[in-house]
Every structure is written in C-alpha cells, then in structure tokens.
Length: 111
Image (cartoon, rainbow, N blue to C red):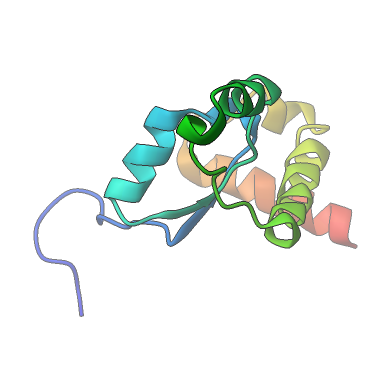
C-alpha cells in the first residue's frame, strides 16, 4: 500500500545494537517507551555503581552476547568502506552519487 501524505515514512526498528557509548538509563528508557528492543553492553562504571548499591541497584539489563557479536560485521564493513577517500570525506554532492560510490566500492571489495 502506498504511503499517504508527504515526508519520509515513519519506520521504527525492531531492535537496536549499540556500543557502550549508548549505555545510559535515559537511552534505554527511551527505547523501551517506543517498544524497541536493544542490546547495549553496560559500561564498567555503571556495573560498579549498580553493584555498590546492592539490592537497591536493580537487575542488570538484558544482554544477548551472540546477537552483539553480529554487530562486528557491520562495523568492519563501515571500516572497509572508509578506506575509500571519496566515501570517507563525502566528496559527492548528491545522495544518488554517494550511493553509487558506496555501491561501486562494495562491489570492488566483494569481487
């Protein structure tokens, strides 16, 4: 069914994989309010503070290690693409030419 109205389509991810930089109580609460699952490791200081508080510190957030390992594949792909200077510095002016450059670089890496 085609989208009615103007603007970009409102799409919500089903699950978010993030690094420790996104491990705050506010971000986790924001994702929970919107019904978005998340796999984000806790920072060491957050673990220490939670354990220091004892039973008042609450339970640790759920963390799926097998799912988090799959995040590495995406990070390595970005790192390989950033080796192309034109992509890393975003020389292209339009979205179409940028997408073409990423597609070409991906095809050359794959071949």
